[in-house]
Length: 261
Ligand SMILES: Nc1ncnc2c1ncn2[C@@H]1O[C@H](COP(=O)(O)OP(=O)(O)OP(=O)(O)O)[C@@H](O)[C@H]1O
Ligand SMILES: [Mg+2]
Image 1 (cartoon, helix red, strand yellow):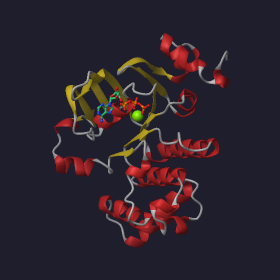
Image 2 (cartoon, protein in one colour):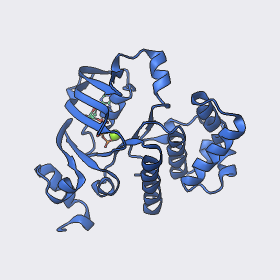
Image 3 (cartoon, helix red, strand yellow):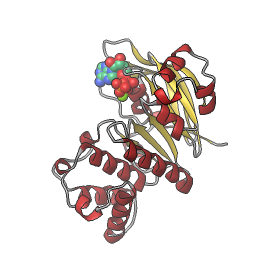
């Protein structure tokens, strides 16, 4: 199996603080879905933001490397990142509201985003945008395209953000709690769409979730983080059925349907 992403010995620190993540090692194979779980503050967001080079200005990578398709992308300049981000690696943020432009209709944002990465006509871009929105359960694609972000619920905005990432058909999607604000039916729908996306476009996905049950459904392997470190990383069946770390066992006990099973 081909390694798409390798995170090697990655340590990140915020100004004035202790490390936020420490000596993280994770590989992501082609077409693999990795679930990252761990309590609030364990460093999940810091890890994926470090991967895609979007750490806040008060953070620095103290050590380590991020290798994508065999290249050390941490050394990339702005222009190289512009080409890579959105195109090859897409990120779905924890708070989608911060990602959408509040004064631009969804359709315009979506079409601009597609056409900035792909050489296709406006009509093709509109069709692609509507199709992807509908796949995300936003049935009235036309209404969606004509709405401003403030006219949509939090869940709708999140689905728009996921659709925008998916429409690029990137090699890797980094998703930070993409479904935690949504109801369970929509969560299941989106999980199935992500699984489909992986099958159709051979996308790899790194998904952060608080919910180890959700990770168990969607992921091939699960990474358990605690206090900025990886405490366990294994196939999901191993993690769910025979967890090695005490912290993983504690996490599993928080899910009623997995208790005692
Ligand atoms: N912008 C920031 N400035 C300073 N410290 C930060 C910043 N962002 C995160 N941290 C610190 O880094 C550590 C890891 O935070 P991070 O946001 O990565 O955790 P998380 O696992 O994503 O948590 P959550 O599940 O709540 O989203 C925490 O101790 C946090 O206080
Ligand atoms: Mg987070």
